[in-house]
Amino acid sequence: MNTDAVIATYAIETSFALQHAAEVLAGEQSTGTFVRVERESDDLRARFAAQVVEVQELPLTGASALPGSSGDPSQRRRGLIRLRFPLSNFGPSLPNLLAAVAGNLYELKELAAIKLVDLELPAPFAERYPGPRFGVAGTRQLMGRPTGAMLGTIVKPSIGLSPEDLADLVGELATAGVDFIKDDELQGNGPAAPLAARVAAVMPVLKRHADRTGVMPMYAFNITDDIGRLEANHDLVVAAGGTCVMACVNLVGFAGLEFLSRHTEVPIHGHRTMIGSLIRSEQLGMSYRVWQKIARLSGADHLHTNGISNKFYETDEEVLASISAVREPLLGITPTVPVLSSGQWAGLAHATYRAVGTTDLLMLAGGGIHGHPDGAQAGVRSLREAWASAQAGESAEDALASSESLRRASELFGPVRV
Image (cartoon, rainbow, N blue to C red; front, side, top):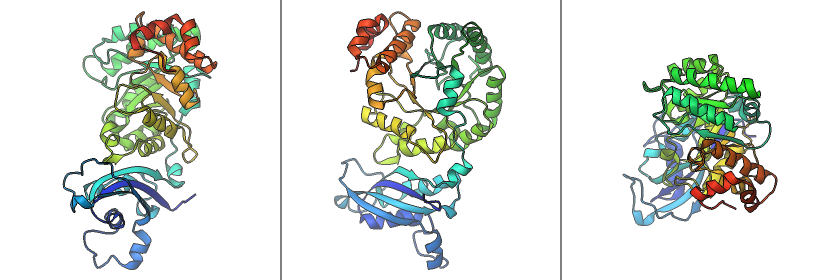
């Protein structure tokens, strides 16, 4: 394994020669500026300049150029370029790595499109960033689900429930056998339902359920806040017996996530809200593949990937690539749990299991549980029965024949995916 450099891969469009554009990018993000300066010696460049490793031409996408790009539009071309950044430029520091591989390059006028699509990171990053503390195995142990798909939900309505109403809902979901419940990302620490009040309302319900059954569902309280408040919010949850905290990765930042991971005593549920601003455009930003590597190193035990047949813009192919990326080994760190969400319901279990081939995942069904025609308990039951059928190798048709709750769900949500 390369231990002294980072390899960054970009998809670019430019009206200049691809090699020239690649060299402009490499210079801007390492030793160069718009003109050669006196102390930028050949020796200094040999030691610290980013180097162009590979340039591969690609077909144009037909998308519009970024605002302010220069050159003759009729000469536009697209390419995949790989740059080598010496590790000595920034060391194994994720914030400073990002300054190099995803900094001013988005503003270069020579580029009509620029997207960071992959990163190859050397071992020193894992030595500094140990990654998740719990991951798949720790999460399973804490939620009492040693095998099978981990199944959960999001509190719905997302905001507006009083702490007392929330406690009633949690009791209903726990009785139904759900593994995991989470605050919506919109539910922070507002005056209508403060974090302390939610914790005080929910935890006694979960503890009573555990006393009766021996199993306590995991509840991810959203502790997203200013970095200086993350510790106190975490400690509030843990002191009450909570077993999970949720942080919105893009809102606290990777450095905030890493700060929390050094302190946490429970798994961190990493929400990806605002991710579309980074990954949606072909012309700008970074890929989910890059984002999830940095989030995992920063300590996310769970990471949202979206799910198939979702309510957002991503195709099934893109979603499955994200799930696969989160499951790929990364520098020997603990595996993170992929979290499937957005428009999920029991009728997607068979197609999901067939596509991903594992139950080491957490499927969250918000409307798919709360919107079930027979109520949330039936929604949980439909999900559990569908996944049990899929894992047993049965067909979706077999599941529909044997599960009343799945049949009822399909009357509302549509045909079961096969």
